[in-house]
Image 1 (cartoon, rainbow, N blue to C red):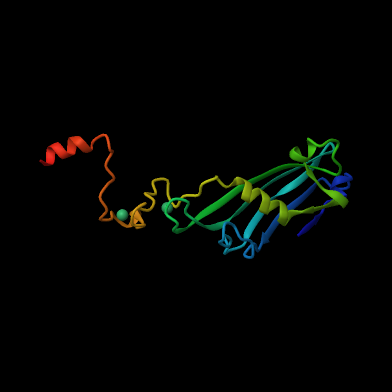
Image 2 (image 1 turned 90 degrees about the vertical axis):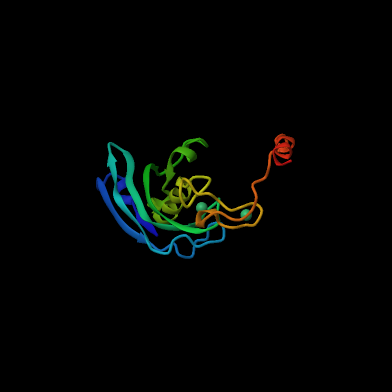
Length: 165
Ligand SMILES: [Zn+2]
Ligand SMILES: [Zn+2]
């Protein structure tokens, strides 16, 4: 979705308010479709003395597969979207620092998706103390212990043999 910022960039107006909802239900992440409900972006973009800044936040719910136990879980999103917008880039480095608004149009849905994905930790866990799955039988240990014997440290084996004899 394109937001027309021509007037703002030229100084014709000082503020553009944002309140948009995006349907990202067709976006896949690691084989799941995380966005079952729309992601809402609220905030504004202001031009102060020629510097155009965006202060907004994206909110929604996302579904994901836990990295440790492979169960499906949900988390609330509240992703800050703080950017400086420019109509042209002066150098290569600027591309990392600023958001380029070419032709006076900002692709807000694309920017939202990027910000949301960049905000995610490298590992998504269903809970901080997720116990994961048993490497031997594959049982989800959050649902209770499995019947597998714990692997014995080989250095302790002679000692245990002694105790059992
Ligand atoms: Zn988990
Ligand atoms: Zn097991």
